[in-house]
Image (cartoon, rainbow, N blue to C red; front, top):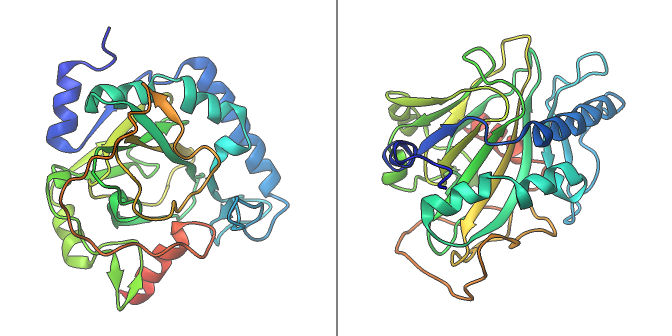
Length: 290
């Protein structure tokens, strides 16, 4: 039985994204939420980014507003390396199977991260395209945003520029700096017609990797935490270093390894490897350059 209806598949290819409820089982959702809650409690004792990924950069990143009383853990990079709950979702959940249905191809895991906006946290994500961070030989890639909390109008839902995955790959450079965000003119155009990724905990937003997207601050008393994974067609070869590296990069999650590379034409400037704990640090340069 297909996991996605024809209507859902059509929405993905028309809008560049589709939100599907009940993508995670109650058991998968509960395990992931419990693990993230434990990490939030741990972060209370920290005053700056901490932990270490395999490239030496910090794994856990906090918003500048972070305090012991009001923790603002905003990013956990490559959680699959330090949590069986998240590794199980990547290996066994229905989400990669949905990606396989959309592309009708075997699927690899490229990278994963947790992005969180805890209550009354001012974290903002500027307009950008994920492909600008993770170019591959073809663009059959999906950013799967799994909702660990209910996502509402008030807690900073993702906004996707409708149909933007069919448009150009925009520059994410400014004044010879890679800032991980598009310029003001592109951002203004993106705001004119958006799809909001909202729904109950356990849902997933499947977003094409070329879709322009952004989100605002969480002004509510409810958290908004997403487990975000990049899944790619197995014949899409990575063209730049993984900005969120892990020992699980390249792991087959749907089908068998085709031992083949497929290339489609495109042109873009290569991304700059992040120096800080997360792309939030890169996007802070966009604000200063803007």
